Image (cartoon, rainbow over all chains, first blue to last red; front, side):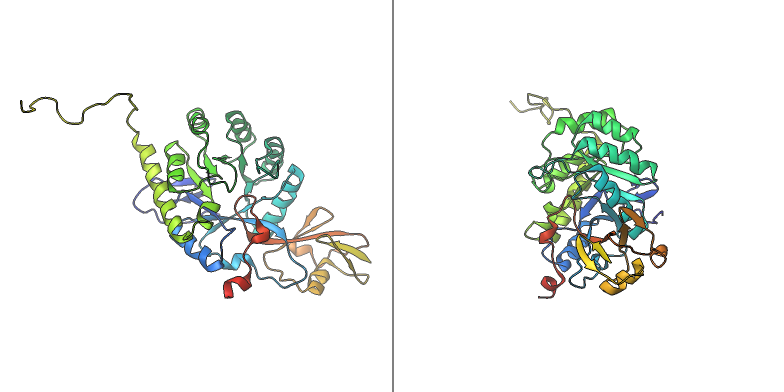
Length: 265
Length: 82
């Protein structure tokens, strides 16, 4: 299942299980105004993996496969979006695996329709079952360190804390939680999922130490989706480089950049 | 016999297999998955899996979505062609 991707500019690759990516941006496939717009955005984003949802086939009309509109080079990450219980998520995951012949899965169990906040308890229950069945599980969950540890203990390959509610575009609402998660779980693969609204939000998530960011609405609902996709690509790269470079400490008072000696009197 | 397909009841003749059902419904069979009474039926077993009265069948495919996804508003092929 390994993919041979060219490493450009940097050896700073991003790994999930036995997959290696150069892009740290994972994007969704929903809410675009047209397939063509989605394709342009995907291309501009440089993303190598996209996520898709599982739904009943409509029986009253012939439907083409949505997957035909995706660049065949893209790795497909099926998700359990729309599931409200561990049971539904497990069934959906099994169907996705059968249809796509992939063990990859973005696990999502929603707890409430208004906030779309994840049901952490049901998510953990589903994760335990799916890991035992050989799935490579990437769970969406609240940005909580203890939950993160439990999901990793359950065998999840990566963890996907939210930045803000799904589709809200509010950006990282609790940077302290993400920083703590990064510091306490230095070896975990952390993918910030949901809530990013614009490029600076993605950069902040990366500066906080996220390994990657997954987004959909921020790109799909931008007036020019392809332009925003490119902005996200650059922001994620910038944020990653800033994180890797180790930022200067914050100080309350000024600290002169020019030498103090030799000023004319 | 009566079976429930994606929540809709369908009146079918006896002695049909899962594959026969897919053919009757005229569904594209690539990259779909089928569940019979809450268990996935592998593609290779569709032809040899008989349907019986009151069976629950779920047939799924993939649609655009990221997180949760307001998929009811998802684009249609028609909107792209317009």
